[in-house]
Image (cartoon, rainbow, N blue to C red):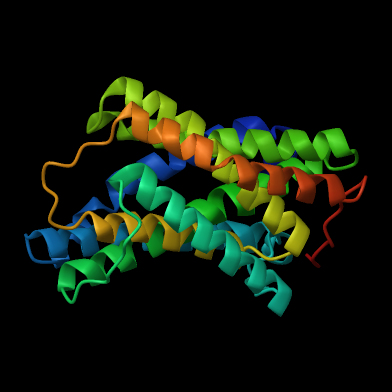
Length: 266
């Protein structure tokens, strides 16, 4: 495990690619958990959720073995101010996503098992992806490059680019042009999530932001079988992200010139 940890610290970009590859392999290996659930839409969503939760536990184990639990901030919930900021951001981002991808900001939580399933599934996705990209990968990159402000910016941007890259797997179900633009645009919230994790010293705000904004759109689209994402939707969403990117720049500017994690005992 020490060799893998040293690899992460010395080659963080390659480590990020290795995380994406591992995520893909584990996704295939955990697919049989779908057979534990009914072969209907709700059952298969729960199968996807369980698969992602198992992969999350694997990456959480890696965090623990690397002695990066404290560094990842997954053990800290954050203070009241942090959650007030999250409340404002999540409210804005949900409105922006609903408008961009559905054209309607009205939201009512349906009383149906499918709605609950679409609330559970994004939570598992968020736990997994935030542990990967704002936990393991960001810690590796900040540890390697965080001695300077430029290094911190490099770590934030590259970890977010990796976050965008993993969305390229959507190419199996969506038009290639849409997926390529999506991979670029989703890197922008990744910058926001990374900035919040470093500035507010907790991974949970990023998890909650990621979870609730994804869940809102999924639930809103229940019953819309003909729905198809378009390039124009992603352009509208990218424009709506401008205020959040300005806030991200503010957070990054306020980071210390040298960012170091507290070492955990071996």
